Length: 242
Image (cartoon, rainbow, N blue to C red; front, side, top):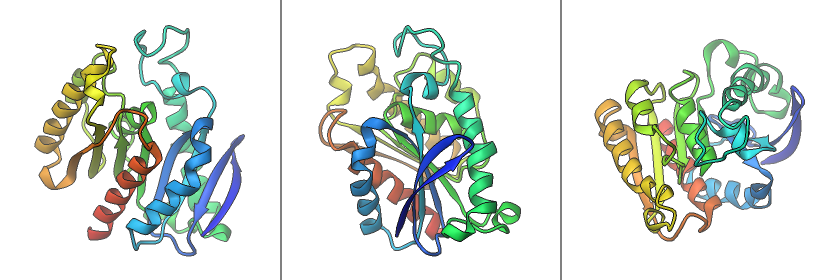
């Protein structure tokens, strides 16, 4: 598997790619996650037998670039909740077309992929990036699966948004640490109720075979890269089964 930095529309993305990938993984990556990416990719490779490519999209301001709408409980800073759509536009309008049409030399995609969508795309993330990943599945039709590990579904009005917006992705993986609903912050502790509600909602709308909810051991900060690796692996295996 090759590892390289790829600049696309002003952002230096981290790319891992097998020789002939059959699925593309996309993940918003904060600076705090870059040190565990090698281990995360290796854990995915050990769990699947399908060649894949992975692109880490650099995120410099976690809250501003990933929060889908304003919620003072996430951050009282000005501008939070106004830029997630820009991050999504970067992925859909710049990153994916570039990979599909111009990166065949790096074995990420070929020009024909732009026409026939040969590479399924999995969007994934952890915590606030997991919330972003799930949100994008109701905003864009280009994602085949969602890998949302410990997503911040405690954001205000999540249930209303989810109920009012169709999920375009075929498969959705959710996970949460079993200690997260016992967080001292009462607002964050709502994540347990919301993720159970979301799972039941997805079962009704996508079907029981197309979603899962996994309870991990520990709190929010317990081996997030391995939790996310398991999320991506489940999605890859779902796509491989067809």
